[in-house]
Image: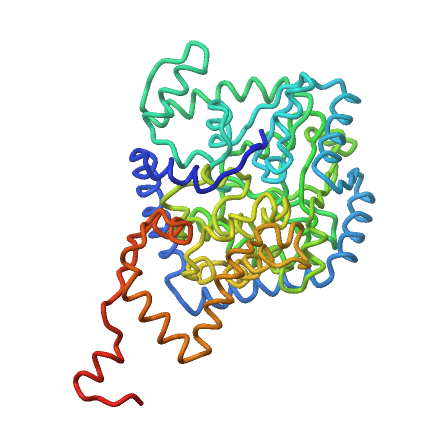
Length: 474
């Protein structure tokens, strides 16, 4: 479900007070970071494949309008039905129409971040349609009525004991066990029945190839392959940015995506889908539909700097190395995309009036930029969004929504003080006399002292101490 009243600061404070959550994240992140580093031990190879993957994504974005037209033409020629959706409401309506036309009341769904963006499960449930997540991590968070906490590992915030207790409570006749193999087998038995009876299977799209009209999916569990072949109807979801120009462009992305995401040389399954079942073939859906979602991406595309946001291949590496995300977890962001990529994507999609707080949840340490496999300048975009949040007339939806007359006055006063030696000396003397007496609850200090110790002003300035020692002013 969409979060009505988002408040990152309050959600973060709550997360920081949960020792179990922080322990779960620390253990998981340490392992992921170490394993990923081993996959890219050769710095020259890392820089080479990273540069190649970034160039593939940059070239595709440069030609995006024509590639989307080419993709639609080739998908249609292959027998795949293409649906364009400007908004998530339009996308949900398209899915509902497909479900109803096929008389389907049950859908099984592989991992799809676009469907999370659409809040598709909640929408279909409101229309008496059951949706079952087939990815194990997604299935776990669905059982607990939660949003995914990570775009690659949705249940990373839970440990084995918590999952065991959840399965015992939510799955009929399930016995408590902490054996990972038994827990996985329990989920598999439930999901197999769903695969066999579902009228529609759903999936995401990692890469769509304009040249051939091919949908590419990477996965580890086989659930994606089951969703796309067993039910008679397959619906795939993708954002407009997921297209690449040629089939040969898939290789660099496939090389760098699993190593960045799960520290694997390659995922267990790589699926290439180019058509529904043909005469004489023994499996596959009779219909394939692709829902291509905009949801603010066209506006992002219009700005050359912000366009770099759309390079993302959804590997999650920026999250694993982010000092903020690894402390508070994904749920604190209250958004389908958490972490560094979420902090630049969600405000552009939903608007700065609603999400202007997110770009400020960043230390600007550059760890995400150094680790991004497609060289997205996340920190530069973060700075741009911070500026647009307080200045009206910007490109991003809701620009100027966080403007503050008091903050503007404070910065103007600061500039005036530092541009006049006399004003600077007078202000320094005043703060030395009165600054330490100011209470931490003072409006100008309250935000700072909510997470920091109130600064203590020296009784004498450096110039005064220098003059006392006989050192003349420069």
